[in-house]
Amino acid sequence: PLHTTRIWLAYNFAQNTAMEGLGFGGGLRYVSEFNATFDQTLVLDDYITFDAGVWYRKPLRTGQVLKLQLNVENIFNEDYFVRASDRGIVHPGEPLLVVGSIGVEF
Image (tube, rainbow, N blue to C red; front, side, top):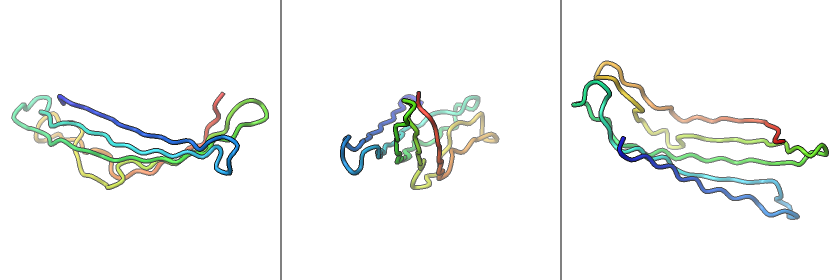
């Protein structure tokens, strides 16, 4: 693709408030139209997908930070193609996807 853009905005609540440690964000991914790898006459449409996430960070006594996170990708379940070799081999993008994670930052 000629143009690829990803924009993500995030907000973390201030320390010493009831919401300390909580954060959320959202954004979009844009990919302009592009040609298949081997069949240059095949043009794949441009697409935009929207993503969001919410997380909670809790400092541990050891100095590390426990992070719980939930992300939702392709919120509106947009149908799109991420690549193609020719008309017979076209790879669709991920549908709506929810991912939860637990991690330790140190």
